[in-house]
Image (tube, rainbow, N blue to C red; front, side, top):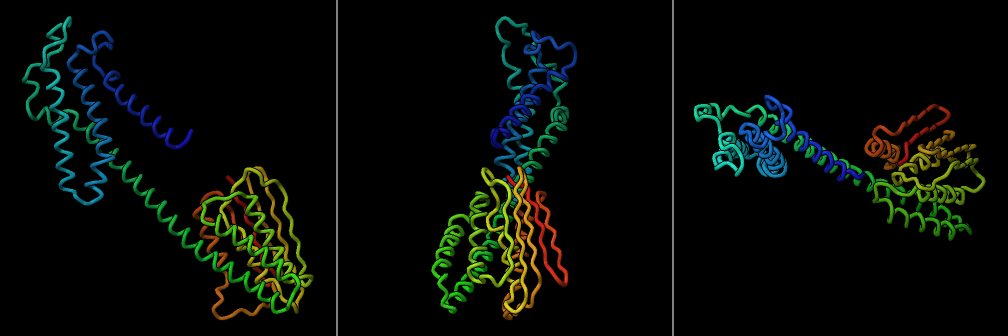
Length: 342
């Protein structure tokens, strides 16, 4: 059952339960044969129907059009006006001639002395205020959630806009190095970059993508780095588990692997990079470890940008479904990320 169908069912059940209240709290014996010829029961039933109508009127029209737009005085006047309509309509129905075959006295309202103005204003006021408050709070909560979702979407778009140029800059640098060396692998590297950029352009804007495609992207990146550095680095890369039928946020793993190559490779020192991806039935576990080496960075190179962005994306997309542990020592840097997959 999708979310919309679940909400419709919840509203339907709520309305039925609400309309059952006059029956549950009807004084005296609840004989179904006498309920619909009893003035008080019919009056209460009409009031409850009007309250349901007011709930949705307030939720869909009055709150968005007047309360949210800060037209508070007009909003209050409309609410008060509807309340007076609510306490007046039952009498209009009950003063007509009784249906044929029914006891005329039973369908008529109680003596007029019971319906003086103060009684009419006070009757059902508590129930009306509950419905008013409940619909107002639900609408405010819904608007707050919508605003939060829009904020998250904007933040994710901003983070992705930073990730993509960051990746492209690093990868082009890698291919540039191959071209300077006149390496025979330059053409293969360009082909791999083309496939990776196709993935970034077609998939990165989505909230979730196929895990299989994301793993292929990681593999292409690592193979590209192997082409660049050859045998000058000691690299261990392994993938365990099945990717079929699983999805993941795009480009959420690559920054940790990029970071390992960025800070773990130096031709004059021994490099050691270990990358493992373990996929279980519900989880993905990424472990990345690199030996620290001396790397000279330019002044405008913002170290850690990719990891910081990814940390924020994880908090937005996997707020209670991820665990990230980063261990930074003098000798090594390691990342242990656990994600609960969809």
